[in-house]
Length: 240
Image (tube, rainbow, N blue to C red; front, side, top):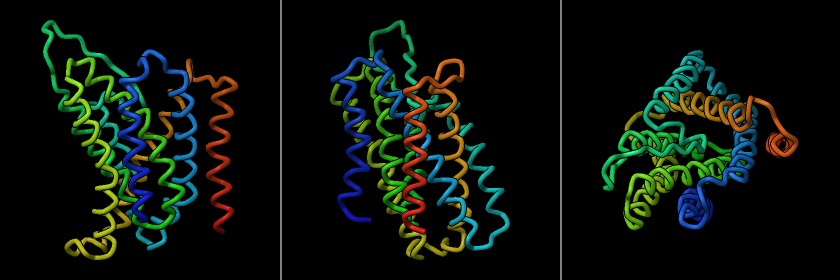
């Protein structure tokens, strides 16, 4: 993957997180539209590209690992409070001091690391933009939680930086894995991708259904979803 693509992946998350210092977290309308678009786009890329690629090696157990990834994301969200979907939860405390949301930070970083892994297996451009868009509201939500928990600006920037490097780190790890440069794990690459696919399926479907009130789509969200899936389809047929 070209260096500028890695930079885009990093800046999307880091810039989205820094937006907490510029915009009020109570203004969710634009973020929800970005979420709806990225969720639809990510779902389209997963179905059109990642799932067929994972089954290309004729591994009958890939489906088991897709289910495992889906369930694993459910477990992660017990600690992350759904920040992957752009949810912002402010925790109240009786003392005015910094409280580090360890569960949120660890689960979100692990989630971002796993999301970066499929970038090592082709389809980089399509998936890159989907992940980048998805990380903007996620990073903004993380920044909001850190600020609400009384972290200093310097500490908040550091944790946002840490989150932003996770997806590129996942790509570099996966690249070494798929090329056989990391141990002898290349033979299990399709199964690892199955776990990531399960995570993507959970994230994208939850975003699509939870980004609208009462599970109803208004005109703007419908347009965002149609555009997201439409671009995924256009890229698919453009590469056929």
